[in-house]
Image (cartoon, one colour):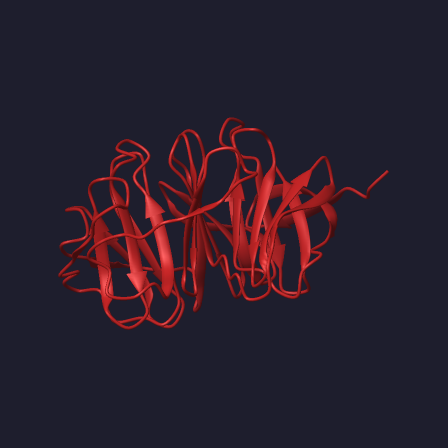
Length: 251
């Protein structure tokens, strides 16, 4: 039986279970698929975690899945010169979109209300939006959003676009990425974002795992978080990867 540990911090408790070490040389993205599988994007593909047993979905040298996004019927993998889709988690088809001058994609998100609306950050050319499921793209002005090398995007249930820039802070757009305003970050190096079924926002960073409440951010786990996902059906159930490469599940 795996050990069950508890973290008590600022009045909140998070029961957590280590699922095991990540069987990859790094980790970039984490997504909780509706099937119950945890999908982990890394520098050489995608690993699916089924009942604590990892299984390769894609294993190709330098097939860098920096971002995983679920659009209701298909999985999008985007990263260093990678943009691909899968509808069955078995076959991945490369996409050839129009309007993106390059495919070094450092952030990617899909609007859960309108899965035809996609957002991405291309490392050289900036921020883009697609309104036809990623087939064609247009450059976004993204006023107020600094240029970033590494970022995490999330679209919440109100259609607002959150941008977590590790070097620059946390930002929010309420007009489809046209403009952004800074949001106070609880962490000096904000990283991955996740959203619970009820709309609770979670943030991973250098100092821990944070939950956004009406009273502000509350830390619920202490330690660096490299990747983060929320269960799509069960409220408050999270998975994350720490700086030592351990995959955790907590509630």
